[in-house]
Image 1 (spheres, one colour):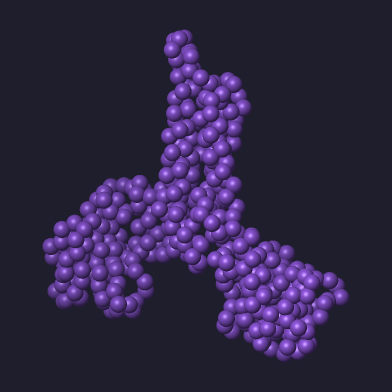
Image 2: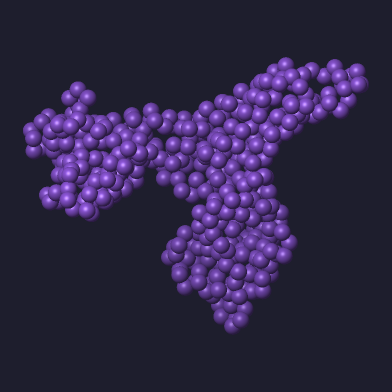
Amino acid sequence: MTGRATIAALASGRPPSAVAVLRVSGPAAFAAAQALGGCLPAPRRAGLRTLRDPATGEALDEALLLAFPAPGSATGEDVVELHCHGSVAVVDAVLAALVAQPGVRLAAPGEFTRRAFDHGRLDLTQVEGLADLIEATTAAQRRQAAAQASGALSRAAGDWAARIVALRAQVEAVLDFADEGEVAALPDPAAGGALCALAAEIGSALAGAAGAERLREGLVVAIVGAPNSGKSTLLNALAGREAAIVSAVAGTTRDTIEVQAAFAGVPVTLVDTAGLRETADPVEAEGVARARARAQAADLVLHCAVDPPAGGWLGQPLLTMADRTGRPPGWQGGQLSVSALTGAGMAALRAFLADWAASAVPVGAPALVTRARQRDALAACHAALLDAMAVPDPVLQAEALRRAGHALGVLAGRADVEAVLDALFARFCIGK
């Protein structure tokens, strides 16, 4: 990793803002910062400096500089942070002066985090947690992502890996020194409790994976029904804003409209769909086809109708427009009567959605496994441990334990993950 370019980028929010944080990482970071601000303050101490364009001597801004020598920095390289005033003009001028220095260029998306991974400051599960933390929209998502980013799964996997190494050493000692009485008397790992306990722990971690993945990805609620059944009005009421066009003209909604919401701390995508009816209009017909497809793929379908449909309900029955029909709002058997226009019955609908979301994605202590990639790697480890428990032959046990250890290497990002890395870091914003 020697000879790498030094990278610079805005690490805080897009200007204008009160303060902007610019980050520089790499072998030329200190020299570049000194070229603009003179001598650097002591490591990890802020110092006020006047930043000047080295090419012209023009004063660009008054800023706080902080220096973090390698390897004790966020990326594992020499890092400098420049805390400037957050105007567009200041940020542009300081960044331009930085990248004009020898060996310095603008950072690519996720490049700071990639360097932290490459230098062992973060493993892959922590990087994934950081990506989820950046994208979190609810408190439950934030708690789950923060636990991942802080290394909860990393620490557990490190403990599991150490125990697998100990078991492998025990098995291989039997293989290598079977003729020595002391070592030959070592117990079979599969017969003891250590291997069984390890497999049980990993199995328990896997058991919470499905709910954690759903919390990270969110749930989908499709709102379907005939034209003019109040779908768009209902979407707007649940979203708290005018997200969809409401019109008395049938067929106004011709494509799906998606709005993000949260119920019981679980992120939910509300999807307004085209009215379900037979039509000769090819554009509207395509909208109807998409509506049916979204309904089939959704976690929950709210079927809106002014009166019970002759063809039966497609999902949770929702009798709409109670203000026009005179029907009392609230539950009537398994059907909920509402008026999205007046708000009558909407509290009952929101309570129903909150109960449904909470049951679909129980929000408790943050789960260890939150992504399909993590689940697959840990499942491979678990299966290998079960194989080691099932065979009496120490040769086969050793091979199964080797596979278990390799799977944990994949989990942490130490093996077979190049394609995953490229896709993951491309999702990060520039400066992260």
